[in-house]
Length: 514
Image (cartoon, rainbow, N blue to C red):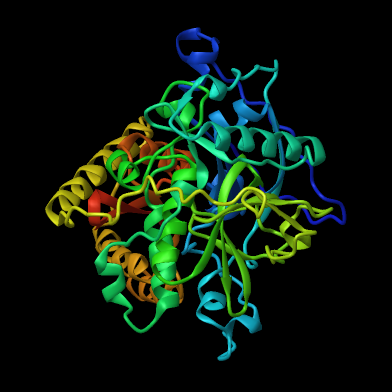
């Protein structure tokens, strides 16, 4: 499903738009178990409505001018239905996912980002230059999520430890009900495990370490990208229940799908292997609700990482999606945030300050020497380039067939020159992680196809199955351009990583001869 937003006349007041989406449950079954199994996502797509003159009319109409309206896709916000269902309502500022290249548009660059003294982090991240949209989402009539079954599970932990954990969480909830506190989690076998057991240094793929042997910051962003390319799937959908199950990193790589906590644990463990000071952050975020992020302490300060997207934010960034900090976790301890304001902006992350952080293990209850549930090292399956190439051809064939299917009353012509150019460009996007290659690409297309008005963009997705790719392409509405002389271009590139983790690029363009 998707909503379109068109450009409006300038106004000193913000524009408000209310949109109702009609949803139906699978097979009309509105039971809790059925709703928890819904994999679909809600797309909020943003369009620019552009008016073009198409030339003079007929002799009978004299000198009248024909005009035509085209909707150009600018970006989207994508929210899993399961997230809306579990929270009942979501309200906040969402970062719009905009493509690395937007043909027909130019991106403004701040002068500070080009400073020679800026760090590689400042050069790579673009969170401050992003586009944000304020959204309020709810479900009517209200659907009540199922109750958590966490308390039903058995455990092999020491009873004294479990009692202390229960008391710690209870006191935290009574003192600060606005922030989450988690000390124990449930593993895939249904056992309660103390959370610190999930944290230990683990090796990322050796290719990433070899790629930047003398540049640890680039290696950091590369492993963050790898983790973000593992598909996200809420536990309610994966395991058809309300319990939140935590898999180990080797299980995560086998399943190739996981919730926020799996992404966070793996990213944190990778960072620890790279020699960083890193913690799990239990908190609340938009749109996830209660979630797990990663905190790192760098020379330039504290950074908060969204492990599912690979994006990171300075802890003072007002646009950081993490809204509250409940507790920090590493292999040694759990620290609960007892500061008055739990927002990252107002949180002091110095865990040695006892008036700001309450540790679980202390002199009165010392660490019992808990062993890790993680393996000593991760073993990766080698890259399968042949399988990636086969998938690439299959996805491109299916998408071309779908675009023609979505245009039943209009012929669909493909511009082979543009197809070739787009296909050659996509590997550069993967190599640069979508940064600093757009301008040269635009000039190349302009020189090749100067007689055309081109609108287009690349989409980037992790691969789980083909259906989400088809839905993402359809939601952009690129097939809805009905000019008599319109042509289309489409290219697909699938880049393989170890363990069959795949990065998928789909470049779509429409061309109208001027």
